[in-house]
Every structure is written in C-alpha cells, then in structure tokens.
Length: 399
Image (cartoon, rainbow, N blue to C red; front, top):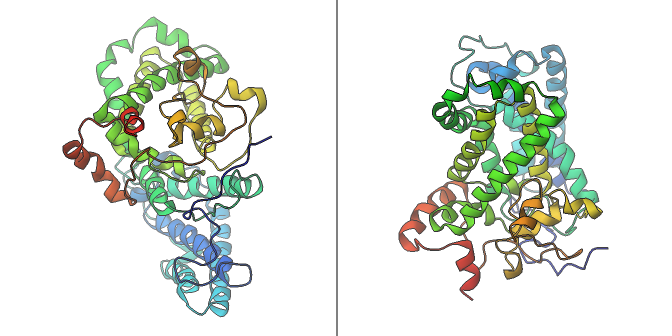
C-alpha cells in the first residue's frame, strides 16, 4: 500500500488549458490531434533530414542497419497521418497554432523529398557527426514505453505529460543524443590515455573471456561502487555540487527528468566510471549490454511510477529509492547515492527507504534554480562567484 500523497503544487495540477494557445486540452478540442500531429511531424521531418544528410546527422554504427524500404513506408504513413491530424486540430481549435505547426512540419518534410527522399552520399563514414537519428530513436522508444506506463500506473496521476520544466528536460535529452560522439570521446579518452599500458596485460584477456553474465554482474558491482563515491562527492564538495544541483533542480519526476544533467557532471562521472572497465578489459558485448541496462534503469528510476517492487527494492535501485534521493525534504537529503545496487548505501550509512512512503516534493532544498537549458549551463559558474561554499548538506542545514 502507498501512503497518500499531498495535494499537487500549482505547477503540477491537472492542466486544463494549453500554455501554447490558451485553449482547452480536453478530449474533442483538437489538442490531442494537434500534439500527436506535431509529434509525428517532428519524427517525419527529422527522418527526412537524416536521410538527406546521413554524413552529418546519423551515427555510423546505425547507418548500415536501417531497413530503408520499410522506413520509407513508415515515413509515408507518419507524414500522411501527421498532416491529417493537423487538419483535424485546425478544424477544432480557434487558434491555428498546433494544427498549423503539424501541417507545416509535414509539408516541409514533403518538400525535402518526403518518403522518397534521395539518400545523401556517405562520404565520411568515420567523420564527425551529430546524432539526430539517435535522438529520434530514443525519443520514440522511451515515449512509447513510459508515457503509457505513467498514465496507467502513475504515482502522481494529476501530473500532466507536459508538466513544469519539460522543455528544459527535453532540451537536455536532445543535446545529449545529438552530441553523443563528442561526449563519448571525452568519456573514453582519459582511460585510454592514462591506462594504455594495460592493453597487453594478461588479466584483460582473462576477464574478457569470461561468460557474458559474469562480466555484466562484475560491471554492475564495479561501476556502482565508483559511481556511489563520485555521486557522493558531487553532493559534498561545493564546486562539484554547483554542477550536480542542476540535476536536482527538477521539481517533477518522470521518465524525462533524468536527462537534466550538466555536461560537466556527465563527463566527470562517466569518465571516472569507465576507467576500471577499460583497465580490466571487459568485452565489448558486455559493455554494450550494460549500457542498455543502465539506460533503461536510469530512465525508470526517475519515472512517475508507483511500483514498489516489494523486497526487490532492497537489492536493486527502484523509483521509490531514487525519488527519495531527489526529495527536497531534509530527511532525504544526501541519501541513496547508489545507481544500481542499494548495498553501497547500506554499507556506508546513506540508505533511506521509509516503508511505503514517497517524497512529498522534489528540487534543491532551500533554493530555486532557473529553468532553461542555456541558463542552467551558466548557473554553476555564476554560483562559483556568489556562493562558492554551498553544498547539498549546507542547503539542508541553512534552515
């Protein structure tokens, strides 16, 4: 049983009118058709642009895997349905904003070639690129999985899909996908440079030859131990907290909230975590499977889901466990640093899971950070001048 949650704050109350055009969002008003039309328009237009400029906008590892005949059929359906939904929205709403955007996206995609767009020549298979296709794939997968789950099993049923801060979080989601090549290079380089001497070590061949399941279990233990201490340092060391507080500034939790991570936070955490994985020599397949698992779990533990997972919550990090880490209530501050396995919090005194109770609110305790991707990029550097000694613990002790 879940303890009752408090009334929603004003930013989380059920939305009755669109912030875009001020009109109702209920069924039959053209809002749903407009939003779906825009969504399909984004996917359709994005796919056409990716096919036009594969060198610059698609991941080399994925280019050869796309089934083009199937994609063209799907793209045609997406553009037609998206345009049709835009027309429906235009006919039902007084203001043509939503329907107009949906139709415009479909028409721009058609002007660029639509479903029959010629594929751009792949001249630089190993050159620089921006992962627009990776963004579209991730957006499709996560929205298809988590939006229905969050509607059916919501922890906070009153929280809308387009809740406060969603634009900021979507911006992080977009940038992290588009810059995947650059962040990957920055993540791998420190380990590959500092620990190049391990390449010919016998232990690498021995570890890399072990069964995949054993390698994955070892990776989970090692990465979580490293991330536990890196994460804890980000809370306790003032100059690191300035960057990590951006992640905690989200005042609503859902599948998208976990994307809110400052680039410095991302690079420091990932590069330090990768060092033991590289030095020990885990196989490429083990690392790929781990990357998929951590991506799913990282999305799930931020989601607006009421699942408690019974006794499993004491062995694996769950939404309830991680929601308490994001709580702005004093009892949850500097608790639950583990990413995969709560055992580290048990061992080092930071475990907090009060029965079936969930946090009442989220955010940075005693402080409200500005919304907006660009503004949040600058926040840590401004705070370095204005309040250089602030940490997560000091936030909770100020009151």
